[in-house]
Amino acid sequence: MTGYDYIIVGAGTSGCVLAERLSADPHCRVLLLEAGKDDTDIRVRLPLAARHLWVHPGFNWGYVSEPEPHADNRRIAVPRGKIVGGSSSINGMLYTRGHPSDFDQWRQMGCTGWSYDDVLPIYKRLETDWRGAGPYHGGAGPMHIARARTMEALVAPLREAARKAGFPSTDDHQGASPEGYGVPDLNIAHGKRASAASVFLKPARRRANFTLEIHAQTTRLIIENGRAVGVEYVQNGSVKRVHAAREIILAGGVYNSPQLLMLSGIGPADELARHNIKVACDLPGVGKNLQDHAGVGVDMTCTEPVAFERELRADRLTLSVLRWALTGTGAAASMPVICNGFIRTRPELDRPDIQTLFTASSPFARVWFPGLRTGIGHRFASRSVLLHPESRGHVALASSDPLAKPRIFFNLLATQTDRVTLRNSIRTTRAVFAEDPFAALCGIELAPGRDIHSDDDIDAYVRRTVTTAFHGVGTCKMGIDDRAVVDPQLRVRGIDGLRVADASIMPTITGGNTHAPALMIGAKAAELVLGSTS
Ligand SMILES: Cc1cc2nc3c(=O)[nH]c(=O)nc-3n(C[C@H](O)[C@H](O)[C@H](O)COP(=O)(O)OP(=O)(O)OC[C@H]3O[C@@H](n4cnc5c(N)ncnc54)[C@H](O)[C@@H]3O)c2cc1C
Picture 1 (cartoon, rainbow, N blue to C red):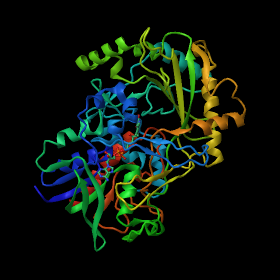
Picture 2 (picture 1 turned 135 degrees about the vertical axis):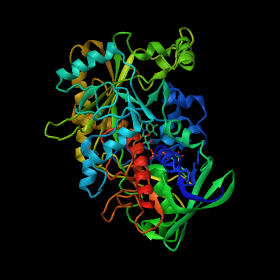
Picture 3 (picture 1 turned 45 degrees about the vertical axis):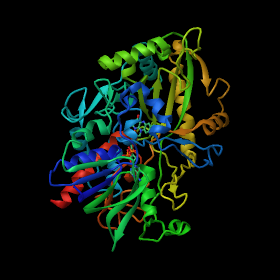
Picture 4 (picture 1 turned 60 degrees about the horizontal axis):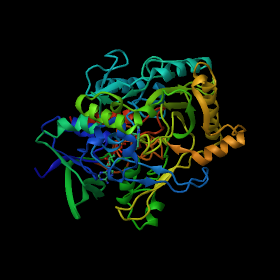
């Protein structure tokens, strides 16, 4: 098959869902172009390997930010999946949809069709939740949502301490009470990572009307008379051109979708002029409005041998991986994330402003074996992120070379509210750790450290250590204002035959991990595309 109706750029989280939905109609010829490799490596399936994939160049675009002016001019690592499945093939598998009011906010900003009531049925159709079907959950969708493996010796005292510190508990962050401390949901099915590719692309790949090209990096859109009619891509050193009879949909993610638009002459005219790119459409919002969840942590030693350190002894770990391979169970079949808290640092807020994740392990944990290599000891760690940052960054071109990495300016902690909220997140975590019965498990505070208490000292610690949760969104913002890149049907303003459907379209970041919203965006995009052709 040489001709296509739809070309989707990027086999990532949103792109896989979209490709599956469009190709379900045997009359639609769908081409999916992916710059990365196929997702056949067993480590992609192994939940415990996730952290290893974040830093592995073989799975990753390996971006890094520009020096961050409010974070001691540090450059911050920006992992992104460069593989079939995109970031859903390497991410932490935490499954959260966002707070209902996040979507109502989109609706209030003019994004008709994106309120919580609009998107809830889409989420439900996507999911099979471990709780079963209900008013908030799907029971028959392709994406399996599991409960994280609990480590009760830590979790029960932690939730009790949180309650004493004034923070509620919840058993369902996606249900009627999204606020509070609870056991996380993970997109893991039968002990294996449930990525957008394993769940959605697998069935599509069997269809005659569907083509997936890997190692195929789209370098430019072909635009004729104000309409996107095709794309140019590089595969194994050759430049190829392909045309779409109906539409082209960009799903390259928050950094690459705006980059590709700008490379094709769609973006801020001044930015394009800087790189001698001919303007096809002056869209000032392209690349702007970058948002991510800025975060910092508290690391502690644990007084009892109840943390994940035990599992990291080389022989135990080997057996865990073998057990996982044979049965899909055991310590390797999950992540050591034990508790997830969505909390308000100020009671007057109408939704949580902080998410704190607790792991029964330290970011510095390593495999150990007696006599050969020491471990780091029993530790646990928390990491708190700003759910609704005020600060905005942007993505710019480094050059007109399509293979050059884009420039990423997060501009984290640019506002006083962001700085104060993150400072308060350290204080709320410490308040929880100080309450019984969890206090008895807390040994030495390794970070920020016992001496760091004043506002100034905590702020300095935050500047020294802040990173992001890898939840970048917003650079091809959906909306109806001058800065919008796409309209609420996800059509690029000013160019026909072109949409964007990935995390970049979020006008404001959701208050939670962004993988589930990206899946929802892919499914919603399919409805919009098919609705407009029927
Ligand atoms: C390390 C890490 C950990 C994370 N942990 C979590 C978590 O635990 N829970 C959670 O909810 N979220 C998490 N996230 C965030 C979440 O995974 C992303 O928000 C979501 O996957 C974004 O989906 P997307 O479709 O916008 O982009 P992606 O999934 O990144 O997909 C973009 C795809 O497009 C391809 N592509 C890009 N440019 C081109 C081009 N020019 N030509 C062809 N192909 C191209 C890419 O290779 C990629 O496959 C994490 C992200 C990372 C990176």
